Amino acid sequence: MSVAIPETLEEALQVAAADPEVQVLAGGTDLMVEVNFGYRRPASVCALHRIAELHAQRQDDGEVVIGAMTTYHDMERGVIAAALPGLAQAGRTVGSPQIRNAGTVGGNLATASPAGDTLPVLMALDSTVVVASVAGRREVPISDFLVGPKRNALGPGELIVEVRVPHLRGPQEFLKVGARNAMVIAVCSLALVVDLERRRVACALGSVGPTVLRAFEAEERAAQEIDWQTGRLGDPAFAPEFGRLVAAAARPIDDHRSTAGYRRHAIGVLAERALRRSA
Amino acid sequence: MTGTGSISDIEPRLGYSLRVNGRDHEVDGAWVGDSLLRVLRDRLGLSGSKNACEQGECGSCSVRLDGRLVCSCLVLAATAVGREITTIEGIAPEDGLTDVQDAMVTEGAVQCGFCTPGLVMAIHDLLDRNPAPTALETREAISGNLCRCTGYGRIFAAVDSTVASRRDAAS
Ligand SMILES: Cc1cc2nc3c(=O)[nH]c(=O)nc-3n(C[C@H](O)[C@H](O)[C@H](O)COP(=O)(O)OP(=O)(O)OC[C@H]3O[C@@H](n4cnc5c(N)ncnc54)[C@H](O)[C@@H]3O)c2cc1C
Image (cartoon, rainbow over all chains, first blue to last red; front, side):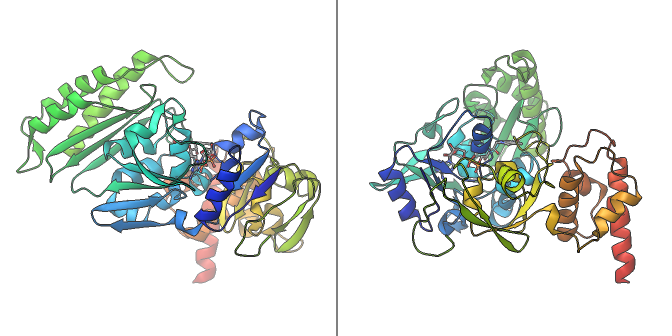
């Protein structure tokens, strides 16, 4: 039983290789709830907060590179607020100031909840998750990283190092439904990205499926309906149709937070609203 | 533990040292999974931080960790080694109150008092970052602190009166 607080990624990877059972700890906002309630009793812990390179955000050749220890607080300002407004919006909706000061993008990815608020945005932006072990690094497209409800593609001894997110020109929206504006896990959520350069629309949905879903058919139709000279819809009457297409792509279930029927309705409303704001 | 360069190992039942309110405190016999809240209350006798939900939703255990407001129930105590921890016990002068605490009393923003330490921490954090918050900014800043008695009106009044008295003092 031990607690490791390494200063470098290299040391952390060695700890993870030596002890595949070690419990990796980032902001603790998911893990400590499980520990406090006795669902998990870690024998050994490797805390990542001292590793400077995991805290960095930078712009790099058409991409924004976000270190795994980037907090929601960090997303509301700096490079991310400037270059990835959809991610800044999503971060702003998470929990409370206390949670946003601690919770990280790496933890949100690793937890892989269908309700994780950064995930629809990272998915709509076709982000790449960079993971590492002592054997080296691999780049995993986010659609392959999120393999199921609370299941990710990390192998034994692997850590999330960073997320690489394309820096696009065009509007981005993140919208979320819950009982309050603060401190809510999404009943449903939606990210919409308009890529003015490549003339594409991307739309990803949270909390309406086993993992984050893309609404591909709705995306393609929207790209046809936008007048790319102006970036606006040729006919604004397409917006409700977009809502219907997105609702049809959802695969919601009933649970303690909401019903499948309400989720399907609400995701359509969010889609229509996001498109009206963006195009 | 605070040295640089190598991996720090702590034998979980052997103890470690935490820097709380500017003083080093020895922790003995802690479990590896103990939260900072537990260690503060049960091992260091600092019971000002309150324990209610143990899942980050009520804010009554709010402390500052390296200057950032966090829920101490979600901090693994053994990983807070080498960091500056400030609790409600550490913010007021000896035998006195901070201006926020004073305003909470004057405005009647305290009923059962359970949420008060966390709210005081959150309001100080807000006013340090933003000396003149809008009503919405204040609401957002205390959105992670639940009060089931006051309905929040008197808490907002205490924020407003602190802002006003700081402004008067500055001019
Ligand atoms: C009160 C409260 C409100 C919340 N509200 C929201 C919300 O509105 N929206 C939302 O999306 N989430 C919410 N959450 C959940 C949580 O805050 C987020 O999922 C957060 O991003 C988790 O990050 P963390 O750094 O705290 O992870 P931790 O709890 O430290 O870790 C979570 C898991 O990820 C693993 N992990 C972390 N970092 C890495 C890494 N770099 N490599 C490999 N594995 C890693 C850990 O081993 C652990 O299994 C809330 C939680 C609480 C307690």
